[in-house]
Image (cartoon, rainbow, N blue to C red; front, top):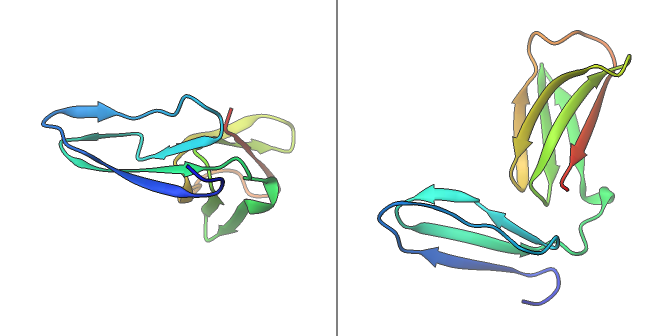
Length: 110
């Protein structure tokens, strides 16, 4: 697979399945499914912090990154107040009910 490229693989199954990448530069999406489907494998070896887009609007956090990762939201005093797992691409998290003010968002893919 060439650097920065993607490849779709067709899964033919009659049961649930899980797909994983054994290298840090591989991103697999979706990571699991049921019955037949398509899995996209991306070379994310050049993924950088600059490829991250985080926005907050109307109690929703929008995170766009090229890799699957755990998203954690912290208050200014360092308490984790929200966490979720996201797949590659855009994910929306409803933060309604969290304290207002400045929040710290951290992504961790490893």
